[in-house]
Image (cartoon, rainbow, N blue to C red; front, side):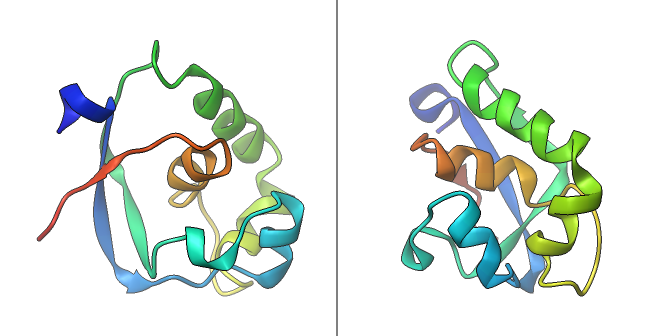
Length: 99
């Protein structure tokens, strides 16, 4: 899967809790986002193929005080959804491991 898509992410336990404002900011359709969350402790990422999403991810993390609450609907803070949302926002595909 990594060879085909260049990115592999693992699911986390929690359901998706993105704030509605986040969809507007990145011009995302609600149906384009998975129902679950993603683990950020491990991932496989081909930087050459997915350089643009990595740059967006960096921006979201540098501006974490603004974006982290939106990524969790104000329930928590952290980088966990920045990787997947950067890929989705820029139309890049990734493989989500099934547990």
